[in-house]
Length: 406
Length: 162
Image 1 (tube, rainbow over the protein chains, first blue to last red):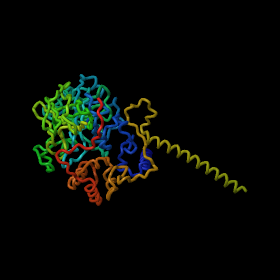
Image 2: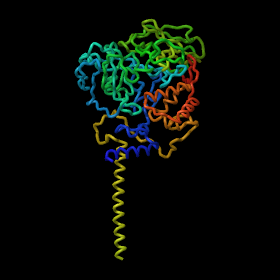
Image 3: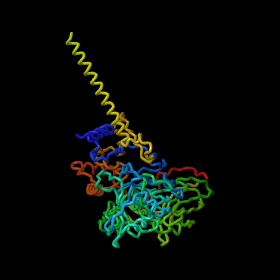
């Protein structure tokens, strides 16, 4: 037995003894990887998240905010949801990080160091809304498989980086390019090195948008590790899975990218509407692009009790994927009547917008305040669940909070 | 006399050797434990980025590893019922049990989920355990009718101060 193997086996043995069970796939465990049971038990400390954030899953890590935590106009890290498909990469060396542009439509493959990326191209900062395609999944009936997000898988931070289009312009790309796909450093849950946890992408039209960034800063600082340090894509307004984290390779494809979670039912909805629970063939599922219009009441927290005669001030955010929100309304009588309230213009395209209202209640009792946004095409949020789909994506039903007047 | 003196010497030598071996193994064990806690030797590398996640052993060895409390398997959060350990042993190697406990599906869809994991996520053939696992999931985590929009639940009432 080679000495290194001996050490590795001994370490595995000791870990096994501590954990108390056999470590399946122990032999393929990457060097330096700590099994989860040995990791810091406090995810809030580990990820610098507020204690009120809700852990849906700890392997892989999936953590969401609650509505009232998202009150800031620019989402700070402590309230930003985490959605991971695989294991967070460890031992990242930013000074050795490279990004390679390759693929069928690239005539000459090219590799950039992170330093080159930062120095060679102009930098831009945008506030961009990122919402998980499965945000709101928990409400679907019949239930949809996956992490049961409620309302908190959305954020709107500022991202600083370079435009993806500037990098692509620096590479010799053929005319037949139609899609880009990212590849990243995260590790598949089975620890199979030949499998990618997720490798999604976007059509060239989205890749070439001014706001589509290869970002290295979030809210003015290095991106936190859980959010993609040292380099990630940010494609605001689209399912956040397009915004790949820990990106080290981008394929420019002459066909729709077919990486992990691009095919089958992942991040797809039926091309034509289906009845709840209906079976849908893979070929009848279409890739989600822009996210739908949606809003969130972030103040006050649901459950507020106020005295009769006092006004209730509410506020929150609204967003509409690629589009802008043109109208904001609220109702205190379950949609029987709606009142319009002011909605601010976005600070820039793909940033969420802010609304506020001051509400009077006619008499004592239990109320729900419902919020409804309408996009620039006149499309509004539904009050009930929108079209059922097998994986439970795109739930943009109106958000509501409970209020008691006493 | 000579003989017993020799024996005593030999014993002394053996015990000295044993002590040396014991100490050497002790040091090796200490190094291995340290390597396990800090495989990158980051403690000796002050320039290491602070971003790295700290790894801390947290298992309380006095506790029963598969303790059940109020009908819940404490380590995983799974309901205690027939098939629990089959589920623990086959379904929590790659992903957390939280991915199981937050889902509700009927038999057909639990089976479809297992097939999807087998086809795309490296889940192995479950053999005789498959029926046990599916029964456990269908009985303990069945699909519940929720309607098109549920009432608001778990409201924590509080006095709003402004």
